Image (cartoon, rainbow, N blue to C red; front, side, top):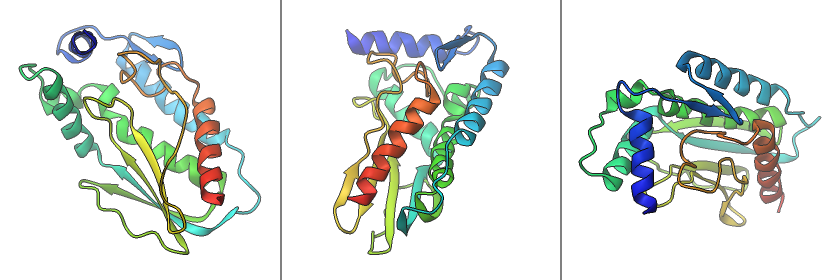
Length: 208
């Protein structure tokens, strides 16, 4: 039943020609361009409202790996086909939907939050098509994002340290705990709430 409801929801969202309602931080947008503008404003606001530390707490480098937009499209198509094999959707359909075409920008914002907070001495961002993690070392930590799957609809964030290995970062709920939780980034949650939870968890793990 849950899978069937999710399929209906996805059909409503991405079927070409259908009217789509976009949600962001609890607000509703019926116009695609207004939604895109609101998301860009949210990114800027969230980054600028993050108060940087006077000096880096962690005297190491952070290498941050995020999925490329093309990999995101591929993964979404794979997930949709796993849920509904006969569903008629293409990569071009996804490109036209800002719910999907803006995912990489959301991940870039997360890296900018880390930079802005000034947790690490330096932060290097890498976009990956196929995930291959560098080795963590005494002076380098690794952050990476694993995309959601058809059975696990939450993206997962990890920090890998030489001292403690791979650690999952708890960033709190950013969407309602129901079948539409993958509808959009920050569906109901305020970006600042996500930022506080994420950065606090990252800092705790990095200092342990």
